[in-house]
Image (cartoon, rainbow, N blue to C red):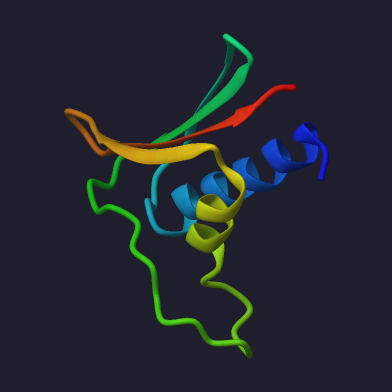
Amino acid sequence: MEVADTVVLLTSEAVTNAFVHGRSPARLTVTVLNGRVRVEVADDNSRHPRQVEQDDEALDGRGLLLMTGLALRWGVRDEPVGKTVWFEVESW
């Protein structure tokens, strides 16, 4: 998978989750630095994402599996209002 494809897929997952679960506008920041692409998606809900039991028939619930499998690293940062979910991938 190309770097751009990975960034687009993981960004789509993070932004979708911000709208669906964060129930607020999402704020997106993309930074390229030291050979890495860092994407941050913030929302107003302080609840952290959590892995749900895998259901092969479900249409959702795979975002954290994708994040763990494709990102170099990822995490959640608490904000004064809400949280920021971030991930990094190598840019080359």
